[in-house]
Image 1 (cartoon, rainbow, N blue to C red):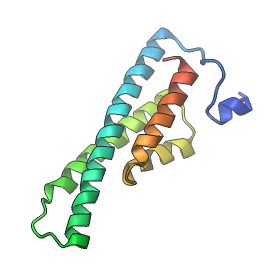
Image 2: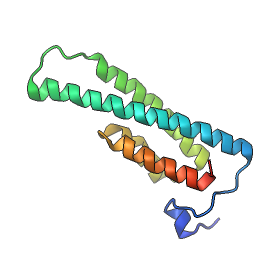
Image 3: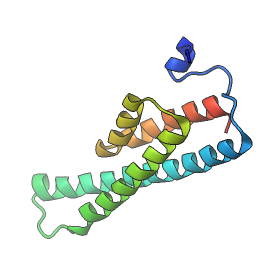
Image 4: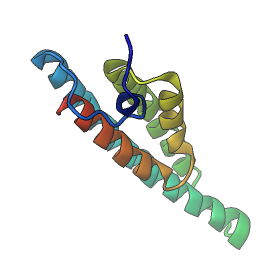
Length: 125
């Protein structure tokens, strides 16, 4: 199966032909991914604030549960992102980059926006 340069770059000009059932699965997987991408980004910003307060400002008694919550949210983000990547058949590099986006503050928001645009353009969802 050959791909055009537009498809290889993730900028397909026309939606791929998929069944309505597959389109519905992709749409729901995309929604789950988007919700967790935002949740992961928000909790990562909160965690970053906690680390700044603890290690730079010197605030004592910062809540330790923030890191735990971010860890659990990120773990769920990993599962749901991987689920979406399988459904839309992302290349491994795109999948890994998207999985790592939840580890850098603000990056999950930008990557989520880009991946959402790609999936919507590729599959017409």
